[in-house]
Image 1 (cartoon, helix red, strand yellow):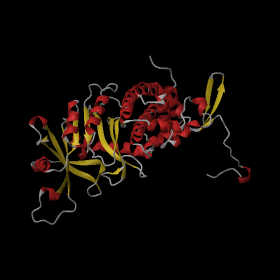
Image 2: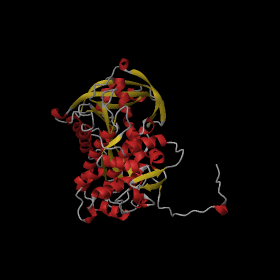
Image 3: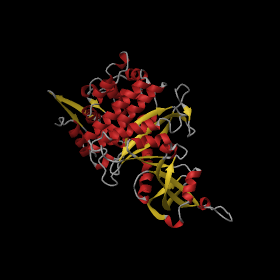
Image 4: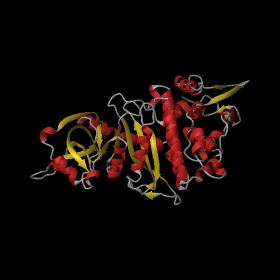
Length: 461
């Protein structure tokens, strides 16, 4: 490929009032309107003074900007170019949106949480982003935190956390089934030095409550999955009180080691992974292992009513770097990974299901590659609100992809942005009718047209 223009005959000017660069926002913003984003924000948000006026328009503008690829307040200017004013009304200026976010308190962030959960339920009514499970009969809620790196000395709450990176700590809960990609169902921003379990019990309770409100999910069993940082009494009991089961990696404390030591040699079942799994202890990829289980009661230091009966499912991998010992012990010849579960899944299935908890890492990466590439404010609560809005934009983008068919149902935000959102268009008006002239031979014309038809169709019922 090469440029066909001759240098002396080429010219460029930014002067067309009927061009837009992000025509895909039309069906996606319309989809947000059908799911009630603007009305929910107007109903639930009570940000004071003129900074909080027209909350629905400001929330819609922020989410639309994020869907279009904005990862800072200044980037919201993308909503105010060319013919955008002919397609959208009430697109707020970046300075207005920044003042709005800086007016948030923690209570207003919680109000925005309420908007996000109700909006997700409405989106699930538009597309099967979390279809009723047909395999294990379970829906999976995954919880994990991630550090969002920040720079500058004036970021409130920025600290060096467990990762050794200075930033703020975002705790997320996602929901998925074997047939669907994860969407974010609860979120909370914490200081960078916050311990992983901080606030986890509340997030778990909120997430599972929202799951029961999703279409067709009221009576579906829920399995909470998490890593060892969340193996604590508060988090586990918060899930059990909602009726959910848990599958949480157990720390290798003496009680867990004693339980593993009681497993007979003939109880271990060999398994071979279809796809090799990464072993963080050695940095190697492992294809073979053995699994077994043993009855186990968690939190035996608690009073009797606070103890949790279940099973310890252990996976062992031969120690490749065997120590030269005359009488090696079990833990010298094998490395063990164990998790505590209250589910009734068989041992091999329980191990397979638990390992899929890593799917939440894909959500972390996706968000950090889009709206969470930065936390734009120096004020902690403004950044906390930005996190919630980023989650709303992520779930909205995921829904838009699901409406186009299987190819984009699991696509990342960047892929959907490239194929469905960042499409140039020329606006032509005739009487009340507005037509978007899109590029000829666009490779994803079929998918875009399906999204457009659904979003602009009359309301059902």
